[in-house]
Length: 286
Length: 103
Length: 105
Image (cartoon, rainbow over all chains, first blue to last red; front, side, top):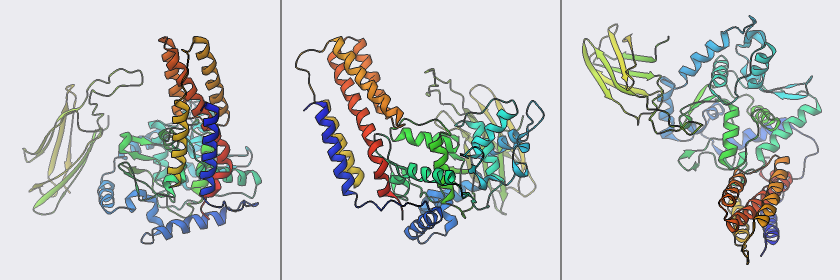
């Protein structure tokens, strides 16, 4: 059998498998984030009836007794303390031109993390907190920070900390572009990628509380509320960008650029469907 | 420079529970950097907690301990308001020390 | 369950593709053609923003084999890389509709 036939065989197999997944829901002509969020939250609260909605922001720590004990201990002396101190320092330090981050954000950047990402109607795109921080730097003559390294994580850690306890309050304006971005994010969440053929949903919707190798999977509900996280696996802090890109490469998909449209829209969707759940960042994870 | 040692010591009459978080790369010497070169070993060799002039906890560490190590232990004695001295020295001869009040 | 059946199908396809054997020894020209085809497919996957890390790895391995003069191996790996790239294209195309089956309602 030559390669062409093999590909056709694979195609046929894929098609059969896709059919086996069951009838696809009739495509909605209208995008209804409110209904989506309701269904999303209902799915998880029904799956884990013993949990209160706010418990979901602690991910795997709420799903396993042993891990919960470890989490309680960790919270007494959290590993993200150093990053938090660094973040406060970096946030307050003025740029070369005398301005600082406080000049770029509402309320001086304090207690606003729960409003990100937002849809920028002038630009027609989703703006995440990480993106906003770098734009602030560039607008003030400073070089942008890497989205996946320590300084950006320290900054978002500090900003998240000032919003602790505040519920996610993501807005989708009545603008078809915003709805499209939201829908794009949703699509990205459920789309399979990489040679391992996983979507975000494969782990975080179909298998929360189950193990993948030695880790316990977090539910998708509230999954961004604890970001950025000190991850023991990384021996350090990681931003949302870091998590999205590393997850993609873990499933053998070439990661897109940090803050690619796909990732920004994905963050928009995931944050919106967790509206109402409190910000718990910065967090710690195994 | 800010201290690398964060410590909290709480006395409950008979015993004192101590938690400490130490900022240190704890490089094992086995990890390679992006260019493929080995990152040289840089880890804490000895960590000491002293109360009332005596060592109440001494740790002999090596490359197996992870970055930013966290330690928790209890010792008999220790009164609220007393000093607890913590110091570490690493394989490069660098060190840090701090004194905290028992709560 | 669904992942398992999809992975099986893909694994089977790749096994079959890998089993393609050249009856005569491959030449450098054969390698160049096979490699170019694989690269083109991977580029198409890139335009769909859905490349696999394994495709790039196998392409690199193919090149290494060719550098050593082992063109049989180089051609076989180029063909495997092409199969991987094509599967990633298929994945991107089919996921355009298939994602809906996973959506929470």
